[in-house]
Image 1 (cartoon, rainbow over the protein chains, first blue to last red):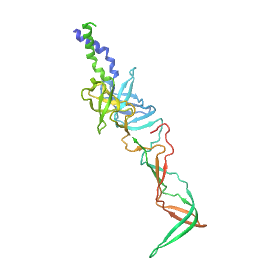
Image 2 (tube, rainbow over the protein chains, first blue to last red):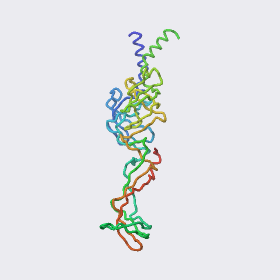
Image 3 (tube, helix red, strand yellow):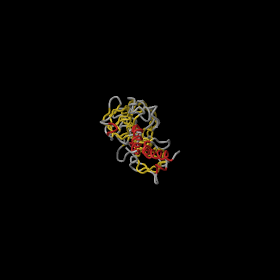
Image 4 (cartoon, chains in turn purple, cyan):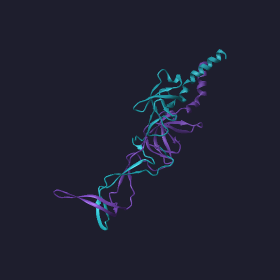
Amino acid sequence: MSALAAIVRLVRWATSATVYDGLYPATVQGVNSDGTIDVLPDDPEVGGAGLTVPIDSDPPNTTIVPAIGARCLLGFRADHRPYISEWESGGLERIGFDGGTRPIARLSDPVELAMPASVTVTGVVQGTQTIPGSPPVVVPILPTPLVGGIAVVAPAPTAIVQAGNPTLLA
Amino acid sequence: MSAGLEAVRRFVQTLTAPLRYHRRYPCTVQGQAADFTLDLLPDDAEISGAGGMQGVKIRHGLPGIEVRVRVGSRCLVGWEAGDPRRPYASLWEPGAIESISFGGGDKPIARVGDAVTCFWPASVPVTGTLAGSAFVGTMTITSPASGIIQSGAAKVTA
């Protein structure tokens, strides 16, 4: 072996652990109930037939459920245990923030209104009344006290969200 | 340093040069294409080259996210598997965001205090007394009512 070849071998041996410094593209193959995912690295030398890896969230307190086929990067901690980092766009099944389980509302989403069975109405009726005929007759209505209720029956009133943060879309 | 030792040092540096692509380098966004890829100018001239880097995809801490960023935003560029042919951008400095879309959505997220418009049924039954006399009828409320969202997730704000 020449001196040059010996140096090359020495350097490659000395730097062999740097393989764990890289981040390697991988595909999600399964999502497990314990929060881990099964990933298959593109490079078979990195993960063989696949690895089961926990998802560390960024930002914190985020629960991530990726879709099968989602693309991510596989890295290794200092003790060579694998972790998942940056994701490509797409491949999302669900994201939860801070343990929350309720969907976030968006602009134009419908709102269910909780109305009382009857809404009390009081006031004074006045104005004009048009009596159908030929020709129709318009007569004044003298100020008349009104007491009553509006019965809220099906279909119930509906509502939609009118505004939102244009920077955050869902 | 002896000439021989310097030669060995340079030789080792040449052999280990690809390790630079395991690091991340700060850079500035110069543009963003419709497919969300970026034109980047790394601070390090050796990484940047003459014209910077074009068509660099973004990777995120969450799956299913698409981000529009401002020209001039600052981020880090790294390389998949340390391969100089496969750069990606991530880890942004504050103030970079133009918009974030979750799961391909395009509707703004509503927050506590945002407006809600309420629509009434076409005909609402009415009962009561008018000048002391009982009446039954229907009414049409043509003007929608308005409201605001009263509660939300205290730890998720926008």
